Image 1 (cartoon, rainbow, N blue to C red):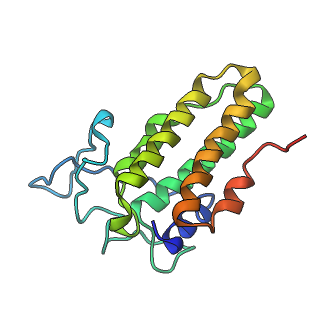
Image 2 (tube, helix red, strand yellow; image 1 turned 120 degrees about the horizontal axis):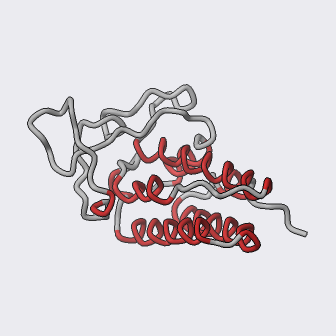
Length: 177
């Protein structure tokens, strides 16, 4: 993703509450009732269907971004909020909420710049989802480190295309001793 798009995605992450619109795996006769792709089918090869909310030319209105938000921008807001919730759960000694299935949709969500959805991005997205799954499975004594490893994957991706959100990502870390 370009610097502007990723900056917008992460900085706006904590602010949005809009749901991510489901998208059909292929164009349907009735665009008013799209079916979401099966989760296992959410890959780089999953075709992105034009015209859905958050796709190019159909950005979702945003109080933060006057140009509107892409589907991926809204998903990253959810991801940031979920990681903050997971951090709070770890601090409270509670279970980390399940989030890997919802976050895996990043592999087939419309980015702000369609060309940013490529093999490099997809490999980083897969690493992120794997880190989230490891966090969800981690025993209580390993959750803080697992949470920060998830954030490491966020930073790794943003270092390749967009440095702006890195401070917001770092703010989700546990304090270092």
